[in-house]
Amino acid sequence: MEPRCGFASRERAPVASLSQVDVEPIRTLQAPLLILGMHRSGTSLLTDLLSELGLITGWSLNNEESAFFHRLNLYIERETGGRWDDPEPIARAVEDPALMSRILRFLRREVLSPKVVLYFGVRLFGRYRTLERIDRPWGWKDPRNTFTFDIWRHLFPEARIIHIYRHGVDVAASLRTRELHSRVHALSRYASPRCRTLSGAFSLWRRYVEKAFSLQPSGGQKAIFHVRYEDLLSDPEPILKRLLDFCGLQPHPNDLRKAVKSVDGRRAFAFRQDSELRAFYERVKDDPWMRSLGYANVG
Image (tube, rainbow, N blue to C red; front, side, top):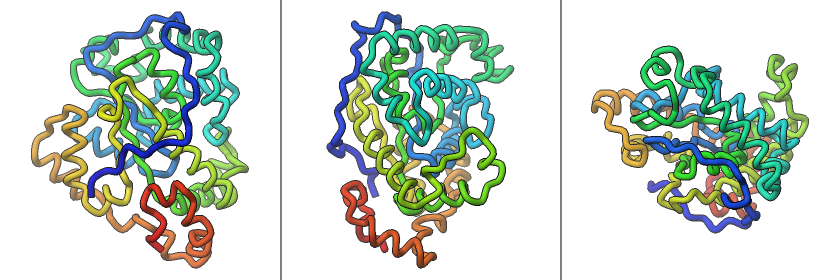
């Protein structure tokens, strides 16, 4: 199945123009690819696959997230007053040129500083020294990119997007399980009272997919690749081949076969195995985004 794309978003928030934000863009040999999507939607799986196929995604802390850019996205959250589970302040920040300029000046200094070794790791830092010199496809994964992209696009005007989305009930269930049963997560700064319930987690899923389908890179729809998680699991090879073309990657055929073989298709539509989740699905299946994404009739 072809990746779905081109949905008409209900959101078109005003974005500060480059003329209003007095920060010079960073010019790179290769425009970055920002991998994004709602938390628990497959961003880690997708990033792992692309990394194995040659995409530079940065030295990782965990969950395939670049340590360097994750830290900078947390800075954006602090400056705007937003959080991963309350992203509205981040979305509104683009309407404030003064705030945008302050954030972008800091980001630009950090990205052009030797601290970028935290993205490259020692080996690649020795080769490139700066993001401006990367001559291979590169980028970074963070679900927060869904809301911070409108900020990053000022520094990287040609940045492109890879967006993965998943059935809203499976996402809500996964988030709730983490909030209720992970002691490590519960004691961290990332704990979310909102996601301790299915309805709260589902409402956050809906906000993320709405935002992701509203993003407007400078290259238009050709600069966005939407991936349906369940399609990636059920038939990964054609989707990965199209992603390779989109990214400009040319891995060895054996690497592609290995990546395809590693995908576990049994993880799709897990909610079907649980009576509580099936009942919740019946409540939310007619949500406009569930219908738009083809999830209204998979019970």
